[in-house]
Image 1 (cartoon, rainbow, N blue to C red):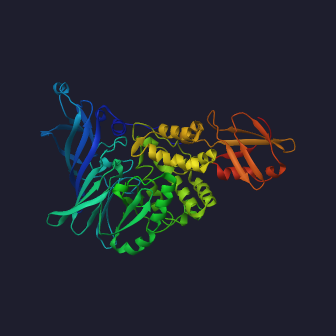
Image 2: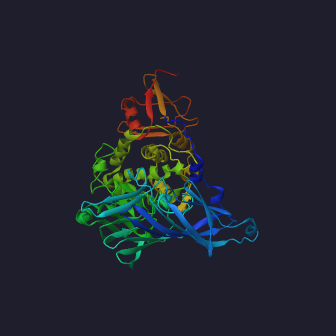
Image 3: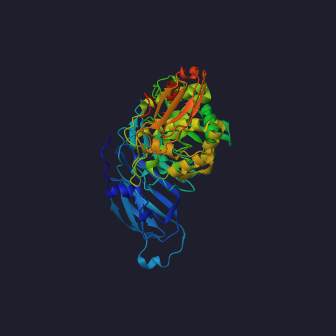
Length: 540
């Protein structure tokens, strides 16, 4: 177990809806960025349009050091500001002006420059990626989940506030290269000798860490697929020498769209299209511009994370990172501590895709196989208000939790309606864990609060204890090593018969046929549920 966390003022400013983040809501961003490949620096500006409901005297804008704020202009005014670690406090009005306040739509523009943090192990550490391709052409990308978008552009860097009307992204790059971002390409202009400006338009709300800059020697092609929302435009941007292998590997996108839409509902960003963009790192769920760096291989860089071989039958980055368009981009957690909402459901999309393509048994085997990656080092839910995510078990353990919830519901049509209902009810919204938990319990008709408590808020693996009596024709069972009130039902179908029980913290019993007793029930339960099964001699 890790040591107790120690947090700083900077952590609170980064992760909390502070006084300086209240009273105003971002409507739209208009971002311009120009990187200098030689010096690894950037300069740019961001015009932020926002709705001010309450009089804001001091506004918090996030921009991580060592980037420098040059000036902040708005309403024909040059605002005074003060830096505090990775935050810029902007002084909008004095106490006299507070009394004259009228709610309304306002805007300000932040001009900035500097040397952004460079990512060493993107996408895990975050920052800008400055690489070259095999032909020594410059290749630039961004990856900033967790660390935050403010590592390369100024914004309200908190997941709870997305620009309601999307954003415009202008990328200024050498005219020998191509600049790719989110949404659709609006135009390409040549404002000066040797450079071009690539303007991309995003019409939907977008989480700030999902905004991306990719610059390289790209080739591209377009395609379409008929989905639940009609014709979905597909765009692919890859390094020029990878074009042919990309065309073959990316054929999986269409089956992915069909599977994800079947389980999760309509792709959330038809207006902005779907894109895969090759990057010099493994991958990231950049909204409508999914980062791809899996070397055009199936599996996870050619490996099967489940150890079952099912994971080698599809491209991990295409399936997983695209799943984030539903959970992560469409539904975004308000606080990084609830990141399991992104990763748990998206991890389970791998199981569902395997099932769609190869059958229920294949999906079950994959889901069971990835369980070996669970560490139980700390709780899945992190610490609120300080931009602190929880355990990496938010992937494999949360994915297994969703699978046992599905088994407890025992109605795949209802379960699928719940997944689709989440994406419809919280369409383009930010949410809390509690909202997701409450929705699943309400729509399923079963209280799963103790199941969520067990798997999200403890590191204990529930133990199903049992013993026999009456010549093994009667079985006694109970839950141990679990939260009070843990109420996960167990339902197993075997060739020898069916077992359906709802253990509690105290002993219960039921009669069993000898054939069912001898059928290896314990092993069957463990393979279908993330629990331990232990036979004891008698009542403790």
